[in-house]
Image 1 (cartoon, rainbow, N blue to C red):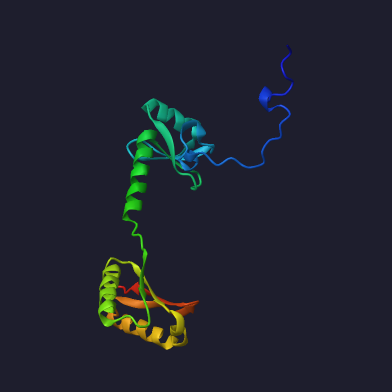
Image 2 (image 1 turned 90 degrees about the horizontal axis):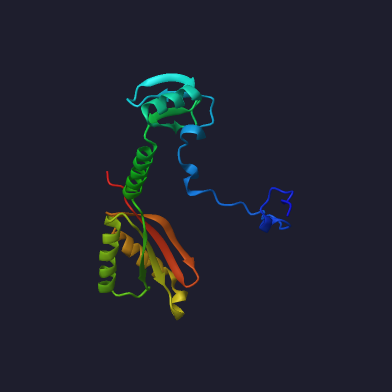
Length: 197
């Protein structure tokens, strides 16, 4: 049987190709190494960390091969790109280690919610203030929400008063980031941790 005139595999002949682009491979953002480096000239750093200068890609690859190491592109946006002679797997390990450290040091600010009603008793308000102070000390924002029920909606000033009273009790730790705003049956304000001097 004669071979198919097209270069496509038999199971793909006659089928339309999908126009949806494939997602880039996981390693697409990794640094290029060895024969994947496209620039004809590179600024080379040898395995001891010494600047060699601008050399041709062939010269750089030969030097890396002679040292038994890889040629790794460490600054692709530079003109010409900066390449270093080193072990590629060790380079990737160091990069992943730095990324993990950066993620662990990034402080995540969460928004915690404190709910009140216009007629919440002082004892309950004190407990809610205590919780809000803990959240603010931990560096979180606090969404202060006053929920109105039934006829309470006719007395929005009670909600404003409750927010004002609450804010005064945490003013040493927080600043009002968002003024009280009414949405449906709820009035809310945002408290953010005050910057320590």
